[in-house]
Every structure is written in structure tokens, then in C-alpha cells.
Image (cartoon, rainbow, N blue to C red; front, side):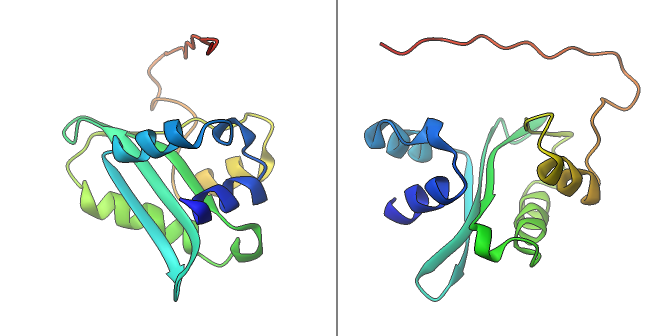
Amino acid sequence: MDQVVEIYKENQWTSYLGDQERLKKAFENSLYILGAFDGDKLLGFVRCLGDTEFILYVQDLIVRPAYQRQGLGRQLMKKVSAAYPHVRQFILITDKNDEKSNGFYKAIGMTEDLFGFPCSTYFRKQEIE
């Protein structure tokens, strides 16, 4: 988990950094986790949630900044697709204004819409006490 935290810090994903015990539980409850390594060094990982039949949600796809643009993210997503070839929907959420992330997801064949079907996205933010 130390290297996971390092990667979140390097990418400034601070929402994961407040409670390491909760982060550990989140990983334990994930459906699929795959890391990319150079020896013992974790370079990036993908973490997914879902029902394994109809939907797979990519919660995290993250690579250390020094190793980005080398195909690691693309390979991680290929491995997820290969592990769940029959799943109908692969979904993820990214910041609308993050040009780098949006460009990457489009480059690997993901679309911003639901193939012409009208849909809306709803969120409920819950404050943690």
C-alpha cells in the first residue's frame, strides 16, 4: 500500500490519502486489481468494481508521472478487457477539464456518450464525519 499511496501523491489524487485503513478496505473490496511493475517498483495500476457480467467500473487507472505516455495505461486497460470480454459496459469517470485523461480515454476507444442513448450522470456527495 505504501507504493499505491506514493502513486496517488505523485498524481495529486489527494482524496485517497486521508485514511489509509479505508483505502486498504477499498482495495480489499475491489473486483479486479492489476499492477504494472519494474522489478519491485509499482509503476501504475488499474482497480475495478462491478458485477462481472453486465458492468465493470474502472475506479482507478493511474501511472506514475515519470512513466506516463509509455503504453502502461493502455496495457492495463487491455488486460482488464481481456479478463472480462463478455462485460457489456466499461465505465469510468474523469474530470471533464482534464485534457490529458480525456485524450487518453478517447485514444483507447472509449466514448463520452452511451452510443447515442440519452443519459445523465448523477452524484451524491456524502460528507464523512
